[in-house]
Image (cartoon, rainbow, N blue to C red; front, side, top):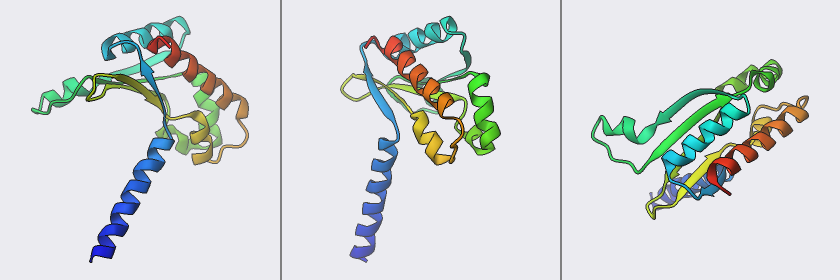
Length: 149
């Protein structure tokens, strides 16, 4: 019984570690709302479509759950995502792109996103390297501008 529990715990920790390695995480110099507002402005300036802004903390508060500030932005560019979905429609589960911004228990604010190369590998897309490179550059630039880095 103890061995089974140890195996389950090890698998759980491995899975959490593997998931964390699939995210790019950067610290923001601003609060969550300001970081997200800055991201929104940068998206507009670059002509990127903002599809949704989800305030997780406000949403869960409606059912009596308290969270520190946490928001998710969903945005994209059909010129980039469209060809990827032509190569493998399943990538549509991870598109449009997302950036999560949250405040940790120590008061620091973080931004995280799934790197495009992870999506490339996950969906076995080998014919769209230039698009993945553009997406990578865009995410780096957007999060840098929003975070004040």
